[in-house]
Structure formats: C-alpha cells, structure tokens
Image 1 (cartoon, helix red, strand yellow):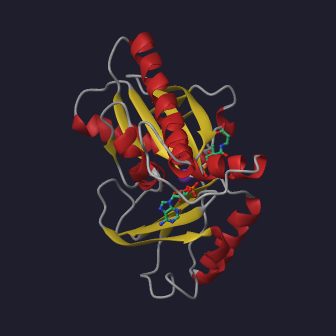
Image 2: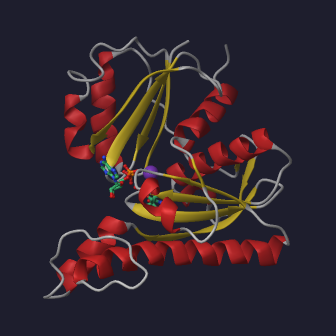
Image 3: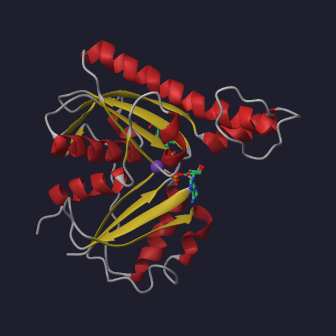
Length: 255
Ligand SMILES: Nc1ncnc2c1ncn2[C@@H]1O[C@H](COP(=O)(O)OP(=O)(O)O)[C@@H](O)[C@H]1O
Ligand SMILES: CC(C)(COP(=O)(O)O)[C@@H](O)C(=O)NCCC(=O)O
Ligand SMILES: [K+]
C-alpha cells in the first residue's frame, strides 16, 4: 500500500513516497521543490513514481499553494488529505488555546518527535526545534502534552528584515563567530545565536517546570546550520514531519 507524505512549508514542498503507511516503512523516493516549482511536479519528479495509494500531508503555505499541489496530484487517483491540528492525535495532547490554529507542520513534527523519543526509552519531556522559514521551539511534557512553543524568524527572514530596514547591511552570508569582526559575520552570528538563545531559554523553562532534563530534537531544512551552535546536545533528525505523517496515517487508514 504505497503512501505519499507531503509537507508544504513557506519555502519548499518536501515529499516522500513509502511502501506502506506505517512507522518504519521503506522510503522509495523523495524530493523537495521551492514553492515556485510546484507546477513542475506532475511532469517532473512525480511522473515516473510508483502510484501512491494513500496520501497524507500538512500545509502551512496557504490555500492557493494547497490547491496547486492538489492539481499536480490529479496525475493519480489518490484523494488529497491534509492534517488539521486537533485536541489529541497519535498519543499527543494539544495544549494550544485554540488547537486548530496550531500550525499543522508543528503538530505533525511533534507527533514524530514524541514517538521517536518513546522508541528510544522511557517517556521524558521533549524540546522540538524546527528550523525552516520560521523557527519553532516546542515543549512536550513526559505525559505527551504539548505545553506551548515559541515562533521566531528564520535566518532568511532575519537577514531580509535587517537589509530592508537599514542602509548599510547589504552583505554576503558570513560565518558564525563568537566575536564577529565584520558585517557579514556579525549578521550571520547574530541570527544564529538569537535562535540558539531562544532554544536555551525554552530548555531552561522545561527544566524549571518539569524538574527534568528534556530530550532535544531538531529538524527542518536549516537545522544543519544551527546544530553546531546549540548550547546543548541536539539530535538532528532529517524528517520528523514524515515520521509524524506515518504515525498518523497508520492510525487513520485501515488495511
Ligand atoms: N538546499 C536548500 N534549499 C532551500 N533551503 C535550504 C536549503 N538548505 C538549507 N535551506 C534553508 O532552509 C530553509 C527552508 O527550510 P525548509 O525546511 O524547506 O522550510 P519550510 O518548511 O518553511 O518551507 C531556508 O530558509 C534556507 O535557509
Ligand atoms: C509557524 C509557521 C509559520 C512555521 O512555518 P514554516 O517555517 O514551517 O514554513 C507555521 O507553523 C504557521 O503558520 N503556524 C500557524 C500559527 C501557529 O502555529 O500558532
Ligand atoms: K516546515
């Protein structure tokens, strides 16, 4: 029962085809496209894929992007299904004031992360960092309750905001340095440590509140850029959203 997982973020669409809709399924093919290139999928990387029999996705890039993806999916017979954040799913409880307003990518990634940690040992609190267009920093307690999370600008948005809001900050990307001595390094380091600092703060909140060190997991397209600059050990996981979609699909789709 081939299964297509799709994650439409604000910068790129990521997709993965599996041989089954259950955790641990074998990855048959995967890819990523910038949102401008969605229209090329059906004639491009999707053209020669084994036909997916089920599909589940999450989309935070808006209704127009969702429709454009669904048009490409007309290549097959499979009905598009998109996750909406709810009060409870796949063992995770949603503490958001309005559960359905939580970004579905955040919800799905947390479900993936929770099961990832449970597979490694006893339940413990968890901090999930997703570094994409925006950065999100979530806390889940040992009982699987999402307690709340931070949203901050990603690297690209921080740099663009500084470029458009000032006269003198049009410079190439720099390196992360403890004591930056040029504009490029100052901007790159500032953005990186802003994110690392916010994450450190969340970890401290979790330790204070739960009385226990959390497991720390990081994912997202720009996760590899952040990993070396974190104040604590983070496990970098490629595809938490796909893992979460597999967990949800295995519960939703019978057979
Ligand atoms: N090969 C790449 N293509 C696009 N973005 C990349 C790439 N490698 C790292 N990035 C970074 O990842 C971010 C996008 O990550 P992604 O997880 O695709 O975001 P989103 O889920 O919001 O679409 C970009 O802001 C960019 O800085
Ligand atoms: C926070 C986000 C913009 C992250 O988007 P991304 O960086 O993955 O493209 C997205 O999850 C979103 O639009 N959330 C809705 C608001 C909320 O979660 O509170
Ligand atoms: K994302």
